[in-house]
Amino acid sequence: MRIAVDGRPLRHPFSGIGVYTREILARIAGDHDLFIYLDRQLEQPSDFKGTFRSGPSRGLTGLFTANVAFARWARRDRVDVFFSPRHHLPLTLGRIPAVVTIHDMVWRVAPETMQPLNRLLDTTLMPLALARAERVIAVSADTANRIAGYCGRRDVATIHNAPREVSHTVPFEHPRPYFLFVGTKEPRKNLRGAVEGFRQATAAGLNHDLVLVGPTGWGDPGLPADMAGDPADKRIVNLGPISDERLAGVYESCTALVLASFYEGFGIPLLEAMHYGKPVITSGTGAMAEVVGDAGVLVDPCDPASIARAFLKLANDGNICHRLATNARRRSCAFSWDRAARSTIDVLEDATRRTNA
Image (cartoon, rainbow, N blue to C red; front, side, top):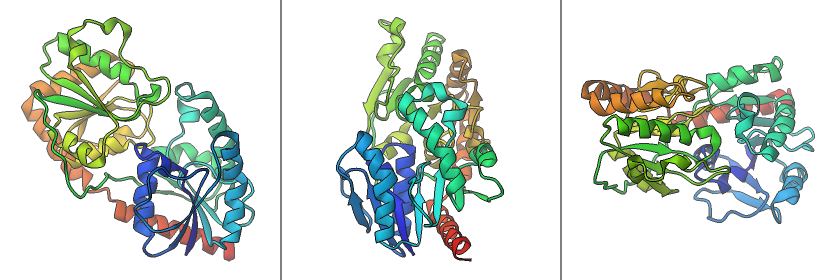
């Protein structure tokens, strides 16, 4: 097939949607002709084959490129289908078959955790994309259920994400045992709640550090102002964004992952920690419980004391930690990028058949 792709997520390699886009495209590029459209050029070259086209800039001009130029390029490239891995479709796509992947419904579930412009765009453009697409992909059953009312009678294919695979691991050495947070530091991830839970657990005798990995997003919560001088403050280590190979080493050496988000449409770091045989501390909301299953401790993201108890449980009870770690490794085997890519191609082919029928 000749497949046009909204490639903008490739500009954000540390985001969940960026990981998803890269992993899917890398697996289908060998068998199909990819035409990857961007509002501006990538800062780093892609590691898979495709024809790349880009617009001049970002901002309002970028929106024009994505909604007008992408469709124009798709017609010129005579593509069989347009694939958007990130919630929106070009408004001027015409009769070209289209598939859109929906990762979450933050604009409906937790709009207060979004930047105003992004909230406005999702509120406006996501329902239009769901109404326009021949087929829709959701990355979890939770997300599929939340978008069902926007899709009419069309099938929604649930295709799960998977953990990133790396060619080698860069070992990570740390002087103390540690819990790990992985994600963009933004309000929805509830880093402030995780830090407050860590502080309470430290006061109760927790002998671990807390290592943070990921870029700074909007409204970076940082540390609570009243933590200045708190003993827990000195035991929080912020590594920022790091390579996949180094991240693998950080996963391998941690006690467990904490991701007590207010809402997730999937939560790739949860699955990645499980892939390395690590238990997870996560919220019993959204898709997080669906992904984790019996491999973690579910907490109330609005209650730091609940998060503190989970820290202490995994740090102090070796039997529970070992059981959850065993469950994590077993459960992670059910998720595969190769299988996700094959299922995605099936959906793209079905979209073209429906249009040509």
